Length: 286
Image (cartoon, rainbow, N blue to C red; front, side, top):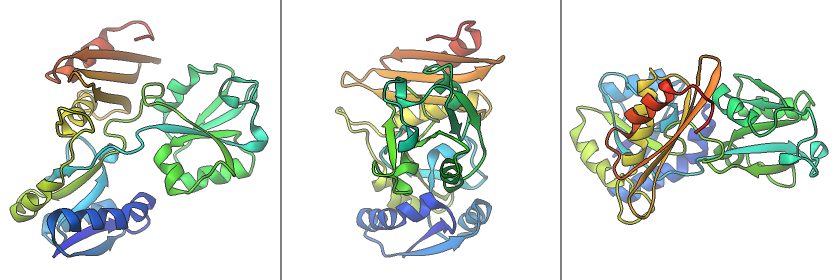
């Protein structure tokens, strides 16, 4: 029996709960049970204490240095690694770029996304609010904002449809997401060797041949985040059919948004090279 830890009021955990439970059962041939926790701290403490077997968490929300005694044992495939622009139909102007009226007020959950978005339309009024997605939707309904940029995964979780909103989905190369975006990390206690061996079979490969673990690209993104001391950055790495790695990154430095794009045949020190390029660049361009 594997015990899965889930945070009670976490929309992400509740949305993916059944899928994650079924995936664990299918891959490990083990029965599962769910235990709920009030917050992530309680979840992690229970994992270390051996009260639960596994804690699925969004990789992009995890610090690069995990709490002592906790390790990432397996990673899911990447799902919806993008942002979407949500516009109530009354605010749509198809004659303008991105279908936004002049001087529209657009909301964001983080500054690094907001700063990238401003490069599309300099006339827009933009604000970053540290609120939940349902609160952002309330802001839209009250007319305090004309549009909102949110993770495409949030669009799915909150079941937002074209009947309610005009939705524009960005390519992650256009609006670079956070490191590890769209990937689920299956956390276990470091000393729980039996569970770690069971979950190893769940570790996903990239959807490209020759197949390699998804960690070959997410490790590059998270290494770059680590080099910036877990600061708010954007990083997206992918591998093409010729096995070349391509890393796109954005960071706020010295009052400027700095961006970099690097490609090489291996992922060796790709994050380090990108870091050096970002801290040495003087212009806001690739």
